[in-house]
Length: 252
Image (cartoon, rainbow, N blue to C red):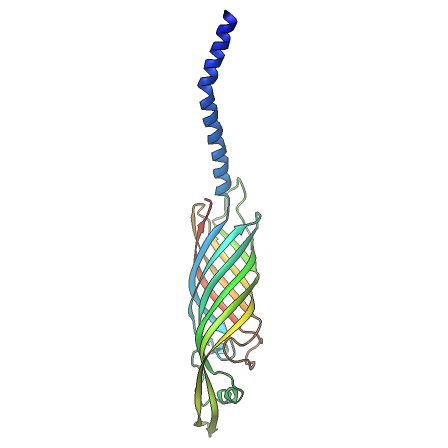
């Protein structure tokens, strides 16, 4: 009789404790999953800022004369390891050569004789993929840095549309523009490019962070400005921009 009573007590105790044990296990796994998610860098980042283009007709760079135009981007990053992410970015940058040279400048006549634009205005749409390296990433169980620094190098493609002007049959006499006409047209260019990015991001350790990023896009040709007669130190056109960024983590 005592043996049966013990079995009965054990059954009652197990019925009482099973829900508690199950609840404890669920809570433990949930807590472990939460800790894992809190450490993830997977994110979506939006940016807005200003950019310029290093091109034949887009400025007089030794005097720091060039146009700054708006630019924006949206990117997705997937954490691969403690120091590396894989990042895809899409965006656009406004392009404007400005009008820093007067029509009586001999180089404008020379460009026109070769069918090259002296002025353009448009937009470049870009898409690139790159691995991103973090110099001082957060470590599991450690105290995070106030700011994280990173660097990226990848490969991308750009499509640009522009309205351009070419000086046709231009003639100068005694430094005066006396003859010629301006040919206006709309053109587009497709080019591969090598993106280079450097930035820093805050480390609030919550769902949102803020930062600043500088990007350079080294194009594989010199046609984005409608002018491929080299008038700069390097042949390819280069687009440069800096953006203020807002980052939203996906799994935190």
